[in-house]
Image (cartoon, rainbow, N blue to C red):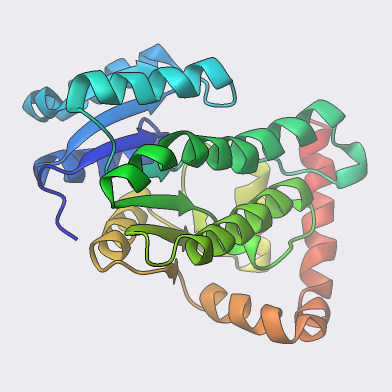
Length: 269
């Protein structure tokens, strides 16, 4: 797939990974609508993009809200005449023992990470089917293949996004509309609280830089990959967990105890 002249609705464009992706997409000649939750972040991104921003429009929107999702589609129609690609990158996390997490936090994580991407895809799909082609790109996580202690809600939301991507891909076979699911491992972004990095150092959990992850995501889209897992050995563990989850249970037992310790410390700060 070539990005030149591709009309892209980019949800979560102003984040750590998204800003690098936006720059590369626009440099490749894509026509991009940058969607973010906060006006200040979008303004900062637009300034960073410089002249490249001339090929973009931007929307401040909360895509957990139906009226904002509809506005995103409307702006794409008005600005570019339609949508060729939807990128669902927006996400939130929580590092906490599940019993100590609030109901509001659990609901919000599921809404932002799973339900909103599903409904955003639902909003653009009819026009993609009419035009006989399109691409839906969902950014998940290796935590969506391996359930991690103290990331229970986050893992659950990403498991849901992975299942949705797989099911929708199969439903859309032979329609010209593809679905790509991409799962990075830990990424060094402000999404993570300090306790996560302290825990990661003790359990030897690796983090990738956002610019590297952005490159890997765009490479997977260019190559029309159905699924891509970023990072080793996490990508291998994701496969093993799908076949032999008991082995992963045992291998993570000590690590899970450490993670709980840091989650408790984070909750007491």
